[in-house]
Image (cartoon, rainbow, N blue to C red):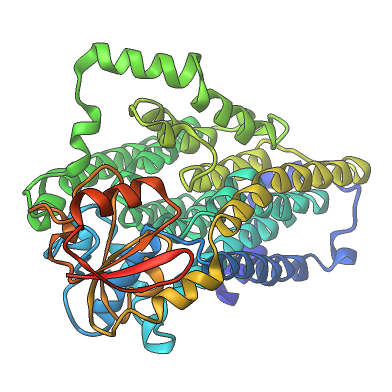
Length: 463
């Protein structure tokens, strides 16, 4: 990491950039390189603490379980199976994100799902630190964009919502955007290629980078990135994923079904009324003071946002998930590229505004994932599940059992014993007595199961 930060902070800037630097502040007097390290360390501690706190109080969920199961079994030398998705479900049969394999060695150091939350925090903090170091090359006053990114709504919302592989793309995208700003076109290409294996739809961000390169006159590089990203995405959804998917298909293809009428109806809902995707875009751009719109790097965020708006699922449109993490990184670099340089007074107001918005997003999201769960009762419940048992349970309990049992997750509105359900082969079921749909499942489908243990919140049943 020190090599990456040093490279970003010390790389010679092109003449066009040198002319844009403001002489109003003495950079050397501010100890600018140290600010990037402060952002890295403080961000890692902040978001590790939030992630671990949510996990400790049983607020994490299925996504953390999925990656813990797959990467943990890979660390054990086995295939990346995900029992939550099915007995033979492969991690790469759902999404194509081969870069996550770099996290496997972490389970040799700390064999616990929480290690992924720490890794995620470091990745996001690294992106903000890279932005801070890059901003130093423009003007000292612009460095405030780094800490502002760290506490921005897109980042804060993502960090309060489990672990997701897109966090690995944050420092990669940051390095690519930094290279773009500094006119290091070959480096832009290299980091763009590394961005592709983050997830199958990361090619949309690479297409955005290609558009930005075209705008800056780097035509042949733009063409190469365009072709590469389109081919990669096509191979991912039509070859790589179906090859290891139990159904031989890309599961999310059906999200694009319905033809043109469905597409127009979806865009109408996401963009116009209720316009949740539009609101998300306004927040993400608004926290940069609108400066991001003055740079071609805005395309890196625009294409993924537009693709999300076309999917008939409101969760893709909303701000309170992980989908806005990488767009937020791109937009803050776009703000830097636009020439946003703040006076001291305006910097203070900018940081204060970011903190207020972040608190509005982060505190309720964190509290909701903690307060709704009785952590003491949950901790007591999971200790009664035998090691190496096959257990179906509530999403918030599943990460705590992922590395010592075969875990599946109860799903609302389903029969957990029905053939084809991932929970059908479970020998144990740990159910939440306070959730109506879970109790309905118990009454309708689990009458013959033996109740082996209960507390005021949870019951453990055995087949």
